Image: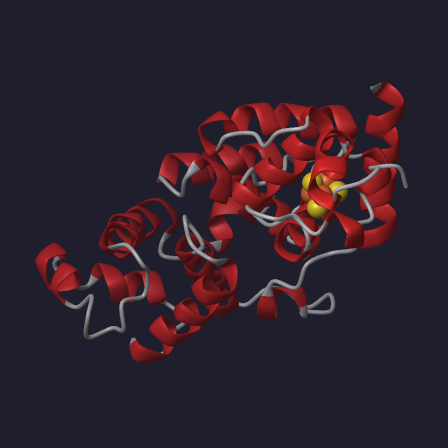
Length: 252
Ligand code: SF4
C-alpha cells in the first residue's frame, strides 16, 4: 500500500496542485490586508459551512452588499438584536441553506467584536497555523471550516507555516476513502480522512484542492467517472469495482 499512497499523493500534486483563489484576499500582491477584505473573507468562509462552496461565496458577497458592504461587517451584524437578526433571514436572501447556518453569524459576530475588536485580521495576525486554528475553533467556526480558513490564509500569505490539514468535507472523505481503502470514508469519520491525508503528505493541505477537484469532477457520489480520473491506476475502488462497472477488465 505504501507505494500506492506515494503514487496517489504524487498524482494529486502533479495534476491538481496549486493554490485556490479565495477572492480579494488572494490578490493583495504583498499589500497589507485591509480590514474589510479580511472580514468579508471570513464571512464567506463561515457561510461555506455545510454548503456548496460556490453558492456559499456568492451568498457571502450578496449578504455583505445587502448590509451596505461595511468594512466593519461584524459590528454591523452585532448591532442587531438576536431576534432582529433571526427575523431578517428571508429579507437578506437566505444567506445560508440552513437557518442555523445564518443564525450562528450573529453569535460569532458578537464574539469577534468582543475578542478582536470586530477585526478578523486579529484572529490570525502573527499567529502560527495551529494557534489560528485554536482561535477559530473557540469562535465556533466549526472544525473543518476552521481548517479550511487556516489553509486559505496560508494560500494567501496571511499566515506562515509549513503544514496544515485538509478540510475533510464530503468530496475529500469520498475520494480519499475510495482511492486508498476502496470505499468512501463517512462524513462522521472526518478524523480518519484527516489522518489519512497526513500519511500521504507532510503538508496535507497541499492535497486539499486536488482532492476536492477530483471529487467535484470525477469521483461523484454515484457512478464515478473512473475512466477520466488520473487516480485510476492506483485507486483501490477502481481496482475492486472497475471490471463490474465496465463489464470487462479493470486493467489500465
Ligand atoms: S478512479 Fe474512480 S473511484 Fe477512484 S478516485 Fe478516481 S473517480 Fe474516484
